[in-house]
Structures are given as structure tokens and as C-alpha cells.
Length: 336
Image (cartoon, rainbow, N blue to C red; front, top):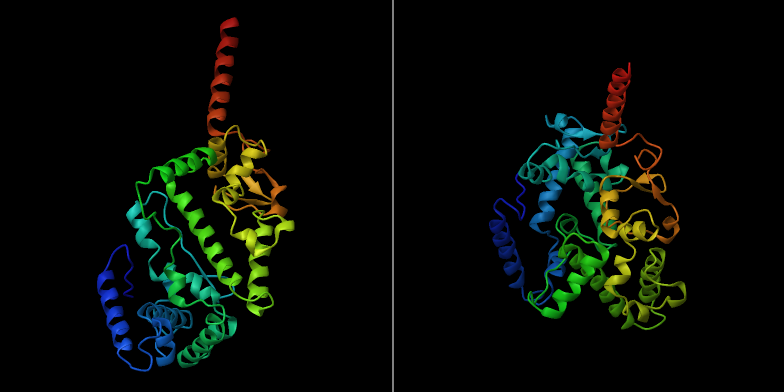
């Protein structure tokens, strides 16, 4: 199915078509000054991205229920209701891996698995459409999430002034101190911190006993305390505004592995994590930027099947052992 993405395809055409709808809704007198999302809600229409996702979900439903011949291309779980992502060969090129994630069998997996059982088990296509719309109205809008935001979301923003000396020096210092790969990892943490601080600033404008401030504020504070960024005796929104990038970088798995003495240096910690030598509880984690919670910090250790643990020796060590055994055999023959 046709589904253009920013990396390739007719993405400029999609933006132009969306702009036509945006301009048309602005011409309506009563709602012309409202934000685009509110205009769509009043007119009961959706964006083009949401329509494409809805079409993908309908095609998946048809395939899984025998209404089309596409059932053989999906990886289905044992329950028959969820989808499983396929795997790309490690020898495949980067271009092939990039294109693979935009296939119908891959791009729809997360969204399909989010649907409840009563929607997936609809008796007909029309019932599925009705149940899908009902689920979208009662769930998606309540949590403030639209389907189009699930697919396209930013993880970092580039600086407005690319050649500012003070910022360049501070970013370079963070990269060396925490063993980061590139500046994109710094920008990703800064973007996360900016979103949290923005939410805190908006809540601080409300009254102290406002229901939204009490509910959302406590949720933000509990999450920050859970990951160890904020102390329990500082559970106030005012302290959220004082958080720094270093506070989040300290909670990365790479930093924690180095501080626990499992690695010789911060860079060695990254190598151990990427080579799957580190586990958190019973789960092997190979993501250096994994945020470690306070309750999981004491469970960071060497993986059970690692060469540094109780697993078999590494490839180089086995090779040296075989070479040493062969050399010892030659010496015995010479003595005879």
C-alpha cells in the first residue's frame, strides 16, 4: 500500500495535499481562527496520515480474517490476534534495512497490537470500522495522542545557533565525560529535559489545588524520582525547572556500569553493553542510553552467558588456547 515517508517517496506531495485541507478549513468563518487540530475535530475529519493508518489497519484485519490474500505476509503470534515484527538479515545493506521498516508488515505492528481484543475480534469489516472509531474516540483523545503522532515524532532538535562557542565546548565536554557517541545523544537528552520542563512550567501557572496540576504534577514527580533524577525530599515542580542535562546522563546504563566498577573506563562500559555482556536483573541490555531506575540499579551485573561471567570463553581466547595446546604437543614430541 502507498505510504510515503519523509526519507523517500512523494513526501512533498503529501505536505501539499495536507496544506490544501489546512487552508480550506481556515476559510470557514466560525472556526477559521482555531488551531488546525480543533478545526478537524469540529468538522469530524482526520489528517491524511491518520487516514493512511486507518487503511492499513483495515487491510490487516482483512488479511488476518481471510478477507484478502495478504495473510501469508504477516508474522502472527500464537494467539492469532497480535503481529510480530520480522527480522532483516544482518548482511543486508543499510538501504534495505531502512526500507524494511516502512513495509506494511512492519509499520503497522505497534499500532495493531495497541488495539483491544474486542476491536481485533470483530465479526466483519464494517464492525471493525465501527469498533475502531469508537476506540479512537474513547481512548486516543483522552490521553492526548493521535494516530499520526505515533508514527512521526521527533526525538531531538538541532541547535538554532550551530557555531556558538560556549555550547560547542559544553557539548564536547559532556561527550568526553559520559562517553557519548555523538552530539545527537546530547541533543536527545536536552529535548527530553525541555519537554519535562515545559510541562512543569504549564502546571505551575495553574492553582495549587487544581485537579490537573495535582494529577499530572504528581505523575511527573513520581517518574523523575523513580529514575533517580530527583530526590524524594525535593518533590516539587519548582525543583523540576532546576534539572540539568547531567542529571539524566548520570542515569544512563553506560554511566552506571562504569561507576559500579564493571568496566575499566566509560568507553569500555559502552563496549561491554553493546557486546551484550551486561544485564539488568535477568534481561540482557545492549542499549548504552538505557535509563536505569533506582530499584534496578543494584541488579546491574555481568550477563550469565557472557565470557566475563560463567559463559564459554571468547573467540580470541579459545583460539589462543588451541594454539597453546598445539604448541605443547609439539614440545612433547621433541622431548621424545
